[in-house]
Image (tube, helix red, strand yellow):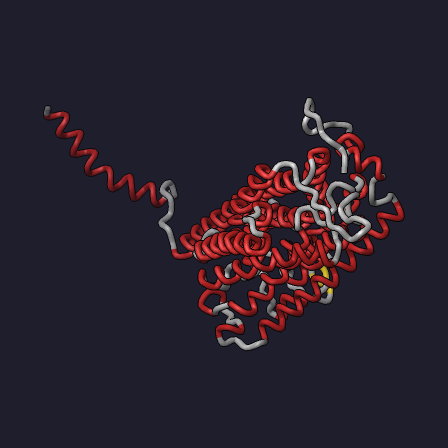
Length: 457
């Protein structure tokens, strides 16, 4: 017992001495400083931002099957596998083209505010630095946007376009057409310097895709039997509306990553406002499109209502971070009416065959969303006031210039591209191939083996 007391007293006296010695010889971690704390906070913020951006990139990637299901459902069964292959190639070929060329044109060192000239093959992504690692992750977030712009076109040209021709198109939109507009607005180009608002891509992504779809639909011509010799317009119904509806729900879900992820920062609390405005615009677009088509045609058409939801989503994509929830409802409502009128105009007046309504949803409503930012923006949300909130016509003028510029570049460049493709490899399948279906003729497979698929017009 006496020995234990002596031992305990020895430890009590020795412990402080050992602590002093350990500190003197560097065996104990140094006390935190203001600088070390700041570095640790910055590292944590970078990690949170990177994880947020990657999660949102995964959500936007999930929009690819959404587009695939939508387009398959709105077209005929004999072309379903062809549609799926085109959506798969949109992302596969598009990823390679954007990695090699597109990302550098979009975000490289600017040449006169028109296009980038560095960063090709992701050469700026140095994994030995924090900035380089972030840029690699940023590339993934951007490539899913490039693929979205590319995949919009496949629906407008569905059921009569050669597969190899479509592959050529995928390369050029992801390597050149889309990145040039992206540089103008997001890469420090001339529209960016003018102060154009396009937070998540009503113009950069959706208008580019929509106007390229317009060029493609004109170049390839309507499907056989769509327009009769007497001017009659024949409906060609899609074969699976449930699949189309599933596609819309997937797209709606992925759009939260599309819009809120464009902050590229999980530390930015505006992601909550962005998610709310995105949802309200989509919901309003669906409701108003349903009411509009119900009044017009006497039935609440399912396909038009589905496109109404997408119209609201496209319309809110540019101003989602700059407008109030109430303004988002108005923007979605206008998009819901606009998409119904646009589909009727494109089909009945222009006689352009667009099986899925891509031109109306993405081109027309993308332009509306871009202009809406100049009308409804509020400084308390995004630092700028639009026309309806005391900001005058200045911002609206910039937005209008952006709409016109994006249309001119996208439509003209895509028209030239499709003209060249038509000369070099051909753009449209033969009438016999179209009647039999592209699944068998282009891919040697049936999407629904064992079922009888009618191949009449």
